[in-house]
Image (tube, one colour):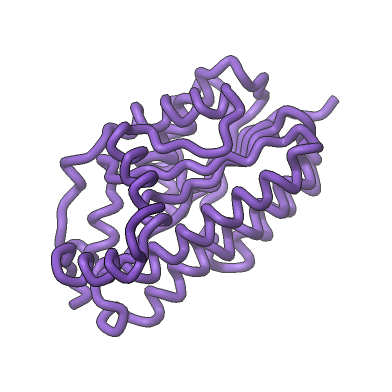
Length: 260
């Protein structure tokens, strides 16, 4: 009998950890094991200790091919049924494009896009009717943002890719869901600012974001914006010129960063 698993990337903190905790408690998926993926072993182990189900830890860097290959090998060996795959791993970088190190920008593309596409392709081979592929995008996916150009572009890719993929696998009974959150109280700002900003002390609590996202998944929604303000901003994006948004963000949305 196949083992039923959840696979969650970026599970060492923030939304990834919260997805692990809430999926563990959720009755929607009859899980035998939860697979947790991130770079920080100590934090992954902390997440695993908080779960009621058995956990398998993958301490890997998804921007490197051997990191994804370790997960692929485990899937080939066990051939489980992937009930839900959460592609949550990702990061941003504040600053003007020419002032953020190119290596940092390319690594962001590798993680936010390439790793997500690679894992989506792998995961779908082990999914069937009722499975869920959940990709974490961002409210930034709706807007071209100066001082955040590459990050916003990567999340626009995630949104577009996920919706198109959802149409492709709909007849198989697989749901592709795209989460598009605005600011959430996580470590995101610390990483994006290269340490210039502290832990994000504003925004939505990650437990609320994940709870509302999973509610939308339960109702077979294709995307979620788990806040009224975020839904309004997504709607507003239909009516405002991308050029206007880019120029506005260049003038008024500069964020502190040690990249500059």
